[in-house]
Length: 167
Image (cartoon, rainbow, N blue to C red; front, side):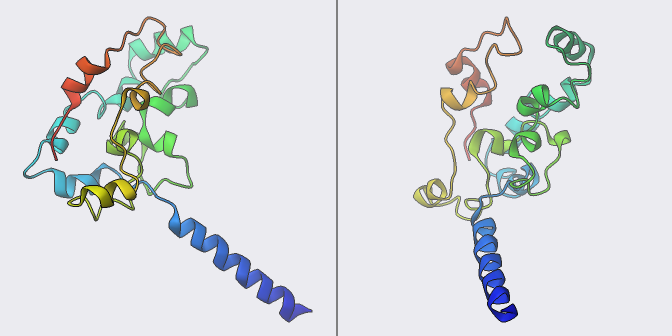
């Protein structure tokens, strides 16, 4: 009986571990920087953007005001705010490869978790097969909406021109 249970337990453990390994985990902006720093604009564009500083914004006076209007006392720790101001928070613990809230809204908020596509970036089809997301308006409006920021206006084409980068 014990051998039978042990065999079942081992099989279940292997099945669960295969599922976990197959998940596309977040790798963090630092992993993207390795390739996107030289020869392209992705890292320089992101690192100087509002996305890169989105978590820090939650610590300011304006965030406290928006928070008060939405029943939030500490924006930098509240899930209502963190879900859009950080990649780490929206990634959740099962997909989070070690990124933190301090990273703000990093590459993977817009392009999807990168563990499966980070090594195949030179092959367009392979990176798409690995989960690379090409941001569309639908991707952006998950955060850029009036759910919290009631007076927010978001023009996709105008905003994409600001954050667009090659390579």
